[in-house]
Image (tube, rainbow, N blue to C red; front, side, top):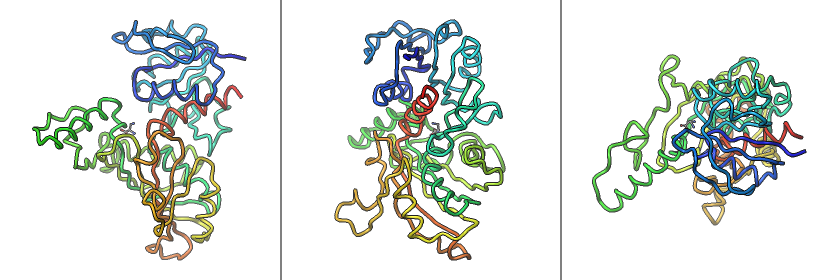
Length: 340
Ligand code: 2RA
């Protein structure tokens, strides 16, 4: 069977990547629609399925559409995706709008693929930092039962889309030429050679909306309603891979060897963990190495020596591409689950 697929937000970083992922994952596309804001309507995009003219995203555009890949923001999602479902489409939505809705599955295929089939028309794609952190956490949870996560994230400029990436590139260029920096547009302050310790607005007791996502989405995806998460999200001068330092606490014993073995065998994970390796690229994951590929690279795996229970804590470092596995790749993987 071939499917009519519509990408909403087709001109953004994630929407553009979704188009590439449809081809890479050999999705059975019979007909492709590219939907975006009215100002992009009329542009012609060359695709593997021929030249496609961008249409303005509106309810009637979903007539005859089987699968919608949503790469638009929350207000477009809330306005349009229920309409698309009424017209018979199934929506995989990358916005935050429906992620915590009890009627909407929130899915990382390596963790809870079966949840995707229990949908009422909309399936939500988790936040990028959630996907990148949970893919390596899940195999360790299966081994010893995770009860608590202490996480610091180092999030790329791509989290603010193409404008965020362009702004960082522009600032780096200015620094290189010793020129005056333009006023920041995509971020609160200059990002080049800087760190911005806030992503999203204040949400709960000084934690931001981005920081609360890991707890709230992690509980839903792993079916762990009592999971405890303390997350600090920081914007860093990196283009498109997020990095995370994660310390896990477990309810059952887990040795370092068991943890490394589980990570080496885990779906979606590449273990890169050898401080004595000749090349830095083999010692630890770095965001430049994980950009434009779909695996979450994990390294610096060690026993958490601060945990009073010797065999109840593991700390590791991981990096993953925010636009790919953090968004587009995961969404297309979910769509493939639906058609398979
Ligand atoms: C960010 N996760 O990194 C948020 C949205 N993509 O900005």
